[in-house]
Length: 179
Image (cartoon, rainbow, N blue to C red):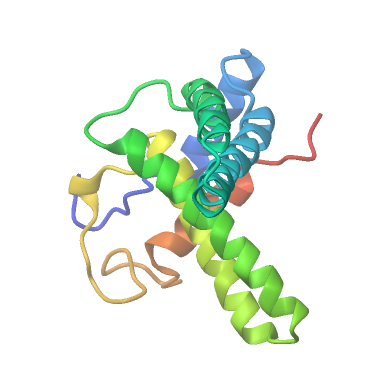
C-alpha cells in the first residue's frame, strides 16, 4: 500500500462490493447490525448475572450467566466468521464497551449533561465502527500510520481521523431501515 492511501482504500469500491454481496445474499448487514445489538445486550446480561450472583451469594445466577454466555458465543459466530489472534475477544469487548458508553451517555443526557452525553455517544459509535471495521476486514493494522491527530495520511483534506472515516463508512454501508 502506498503511503498516500488511507486504510479504507476506495470507499466507493468498497460500498459497491458490499452492495453486490447483499444482492447475492452473502450478507445481510441490517440483520447483522440487529444481531450485534442483541450480542451487546447479552454481554450486559452476563455482567448482571455475575453481580447478582456475587451480591446475593446464589450460585444459580452464575448458571444463568453461563447460559447467556453460550448464547452470546453462538450468535457472535454468525457475525465473526473468521478471525486471527485475539480479534474474537477484541470484538466482544468493543461491543461491550460501546454498549456501556451508550448507557452512561443516556444517563448523562437524562441529567441534563448534554455535552458529556454527546461525547460518550461519539466514543460509543467509534468503538462500534471499529468492531465492524475489524470484522468486515476493512482494517489492516499494518496499513495504519499516524500522520497527525486527525489525518489518515498527508493528503487527507477532511481530517476526520481514522475513527471518523470508519464511522462514515459504517453509516453508508449499514442501513438498518432497509427491509
